[in-house]
Length: 479
Image 1 (cartoon, one colour):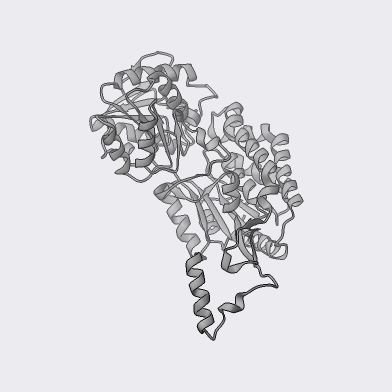
Image 2 (spheres, rainbow, N blue to C red):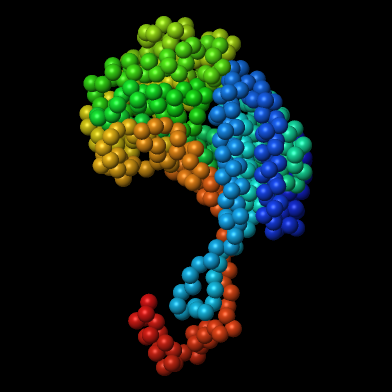
């Protein structure tokens, strides 16, 4: 699309949202059912597009990581939509009775969505589903790094929706900047913290409210009484799903000093169980581009130069390779072998930036206070994972740390719970969606007070005198 096309589509949606402010429940449901039909009829086409964009990413991986999440979201939203849209009655305080108050949940209007490349179907359609459920119009700008998927989304959305309901805009980063500067009624961005800052600045020109789903260095804390084998398997799954290209992937591990070798052995066994082979294995995704792959290699080379021990895990050999050369996914598939890094320091790039790849630093701590201090010294993470058996220790960690969300004794799973809001805090983002929290994010909750014919509000009118003083005295005793 040209800039003129984008402005034209925006004005079309904006006019439609102002002419049809009230969107009936039946219309909202029917729009969601259209998305369900889109997925049911075109899942293989979309999965093939994702495969083409990544180089290696099996349809089964896309099924569980993209389509399953969307189907559960659709099912949950359709089940609860009637109750979510209903006016919410509230109690009226004594001094305003017998008036009645309620909250009217209205669509905001036009919602813009800028989606990332790592889960290119799920993270494009999930916020769109919730925004449509709330009665909004949606403009979607998918990532230019997944052009095949973006093109299919544009084609299919145009097939199932009119442009004034839901449309897809394709283009490069310059077009994304233009998109972010449009006067949306709400703008959703999923991506890096650095780009999120630019999106927030562009939106601020029009006072556009935003939901920013960013990232950060999400830690795993392993307690001293943890089952290392179980923790390593769950951490490996969370880390290596989509080859680590997940916003809530474990970014580093904190474990008691002296258990490094035990964890390394358990992690290698977990990798071999999950991915008996790497190269050519469709269950193990490629790094999205050569540029992203080169960044990961640079991180590892810097860490090794500065004294860290880098263990490359090749499940076909069963032994770690202490090197950063050779078998790190140099082939056309860009399937990078899992890597453990011991002895990483705060000055290394891999401890300063979100890794977004299959590289896992392991940091030893002497006591829990040290682990908590390490987490609190950095920006607040999008996710935190704790593994252990003691409820008191668990609760201590939860009280003393702040993160977007938490999964205890597992990784990633809190994002799959539709009754839990999903979002970041601080540098990892703001605003939350999923379930009713997401629905409310895309609504205006309009306050309505219906005055009674028996209202006694005139008792508060001037001129003030003895009767007013007596009334105020009575209220002070009641309130």
